[in-house]
Structures are given as C-alpha cells and as structure tokens.
Length: 256
Figure 1 (tube, rainbow, N blue to C red):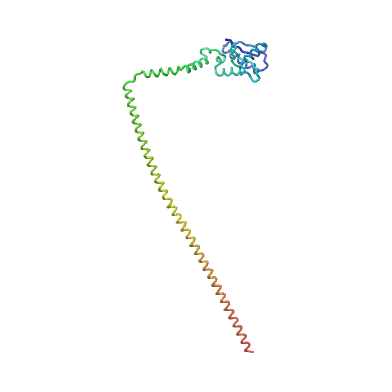
Figure 2 (cartoon, rainbow, N blue to C red):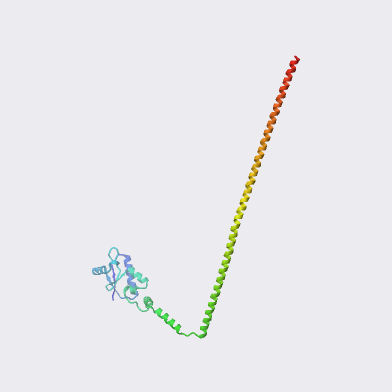
C-alpha cells in the first residue's frame, strides 16, 4: 500500500504551501512511506486527482485543491480531515494503515477491541465465580444471620416509631381542628358584641340629637314669649300715652 500525497510545487498560495508542509512533515515524523505527486508540472497527476476525489468531498466549485491524500486509489481526505485525524490520534486509521505497536493509536484500538469483545465482562464473571466458590466459614454465616435478625428487628422498631409518630400527628391535627372550631364559635360572639356596641353608639347619637332638637325648640319658645311680652309692653305704653294726651286736651278745653 502506497500513500500518495498530491501537491502543487509552484503554488502561489501561502496557505496551500503551509498545509502541504504540515502534511509532509507529520508523515515523515511518523516514518510513514509516502509518494509526492506534483500537479503543477504534471497534467496527468492533476486530472487523476480531480477525477478520484469523490463528488461529495469536493468543494462547491468542484475543483479540489492540494494537498489531497490517497492510499493507492482509495481516497483518504484533504488537509482538514487529516488535521482532525491528527488531533484525534487516528492518523493511521485515516490513512488506512495498521498502527505500530506501542503507539497511542494502537492502545486506543486495543481498548476499543476490549470493549467490543466483552473482555471486561468475562473478567468480572470470572471474579464473581471465584467469590462464589470460596467457602464461607460457619461463624461468619452465623454472624451474617445474626446481623440479618438485627436488621429485621431494627426495621420493626422503626415501623413502630413511624406508627406512633402518625398517631401523634393525628392527635395534634385533632386538637388543632378543635381549636379552629372553638375560634370559629367565638367569632360570631365577637361579631354580635360589635353589633350591640354599634347599636348603643347609634342610640346615644340619636338621643343626643333629640336633646339638641328639644333644646332648640325650648329656645325658640322662649324667644317668642319674650317678643310677645315686649309687644304687649309697647302697646300698653302707647295706650297710656294716648290717654295722657286725651286728658291734657280735656283739661285745656275746660280751662278755656
């Protein structure tokens, strides 16, 4: 299996040059055998690369840019997918190569195989079977029985305490209800007392108003009586004046 890296040796793009250097440098660091194929000077390499990149992996303009990586005729990916595999420690899987023993990717693959094959479950079952095969001493079994009896007795005691607590709660609720009923009975009494006090206040106000009205009537009567007396006195004075005038006139006539 030959890893093919398609590059553009005379690319004017700084970004493309950097991506190509990253891919080549990392493959050399991993000591992966690869072949560089230049698409700038070789039209066949350019056409082969463009034709073998899957349609769903091509950019929107339909022209894939270097670097592009293949394993023989199998497409591996471009720089972005290579970078993701590098970050995920899965470059060998990306290239379709078996990871070397002792590498992080090999350890990761071993762990995945362990989980898939159920090795952990088998080990657990084996340990469990060994525990079942070990004979438990009679004293320990008796001790376990005694502990179980203690647990049962403790559970029974807790249940009794819970029942007692429920009874106390019921009694407390009953007392609270009685107090509420008593309070409810007292409330109408208080309302009646308040009504009676209001009635008394109303009666006092009415009585005071009646007294004031009576006093006003008495005052009016007194004023009327005083006016009548004054009128009578004035009339009497006028009558006396008239009589005096008549006497004077009579005396004058007699004198003549």
